[in-house]
Length: 462
Image (cartoon, rainbow, N blue to C red):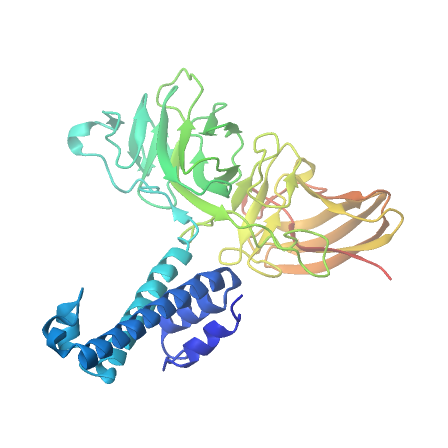
């Protein structure tokens, strides 16, 4: 077996500036990667074979020159041009060998680097996800899209309207907070798009959706093997900016995502409104040293729109078997809201959870514990600096213990910590949080809000 440090000694013979050249740094990282070490050993073996070939070829050339000088014009044998022009001296032979080695090394490293670098994870709008790329005017009949493929990058079925924000005929007002245009799905209408994904990875869709009439509207989101019905009757944001997220696990490289209105309304102008659709690949959770809770800071979650956000509603487990909030279960009837640091006050890190539906908005996680051992549960509560005021209360449960953590909100941002000591009764312990009260914004009673939860930790006591 070859010396594992042979590759390092080989690279040290070349004058690479690893500190100043990005490409060289990447090659260095690939060389020290254990996965790629075998590939480089194969490369060096190949270069050694080339070296031996030129060595024996040079001996053959010298032998011909000494003992058979009359064969000199054809002494190159299979390579007469190479022999007659480049192999006139040992220096020329070695120069040719080094040139070929360098060329092969750079070619191999470049190809290996391109093969080793995976494509960046999906995190952004799908193609024409904001619907700002409009259908051709010839494919529009007022607002109705004519033709299955007339909406760029999308496939439509049924009555699909291409609408603009603002006042509408009949006294309607459509709020489109993230852009100018959106689509409205009529009775039994749908739009779909095929996305390229990685099999086995978990993806979360983030999309703006709201009802357009005071009726019980439902939006069905489907991928192969999974379908979720989202009730849109309750508005959590008075400006029509409700945003939802659903997750699924990819089983193939191409996945067809469909948004469908399964209802049949008496008024054909009603139907769910979609104004932005994005996708994000959720990374696998990593264990946090000193904390038994996975994703306790809620740092891993769905895509957040940068230009406008009222938070992302994470639906209950009944609507979403795979959570877009890895590690957590929304086990209530109503969703919880995922908020980010750019648009809200977050006690720590990038994101947190706002419990917007009182006792109907609960979040839980099952952790590994040792029976009869004592643990500490700590967490942070506060307000999102969104004018949500009043006396708040977050209740936490673990094993047989419970704690009520009060917080008086002025709606200007703030937080406090709370803790609970409990004794595990089995090898699995469920920790649960929910808000004791219902809350609305100070000057906007149509906007539901609640206490913020962040930085959840569980660790054994000594």
